[in-house]
Image (cartoon, rainbow, N blue to C red):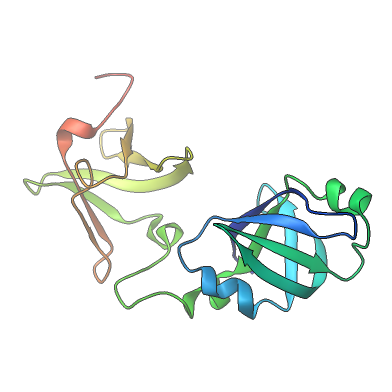
Length: 172
């Protein structure tokens, strides 16, 4: 099962096991449909807790789960990520949205149509994603996924169009 991080537990809230959850997705409606929280680190699920209560609090959520009944237990899960399956998250995606992970292996070309290589990996640096491109010439290139460096992602044909000026390589 492929999973995606949709939030982070930031700490406890009160004395009865409630905790703060910071959403890492624009589709915050998904939190109201969760029956269980899948918690973990580094894309590995460590715990699953049944959701008893969830409510918005400013830009975050306050959550109460079965089995987390005091402040000490709530503090122990601070820093863990909240994950959902790709299948569940797809229900909240628009027709023009997709998972970037689905583009591993996609062809990468410049805005002028020159073939660069294929997308080999994606890193999230917090602000945006960094695409790792395996060049046809054997070189590895990095490019920041933003509207200036990656003006177009053709979902249907699995082609990523990049501005060559945004490519970074040790050889450049």
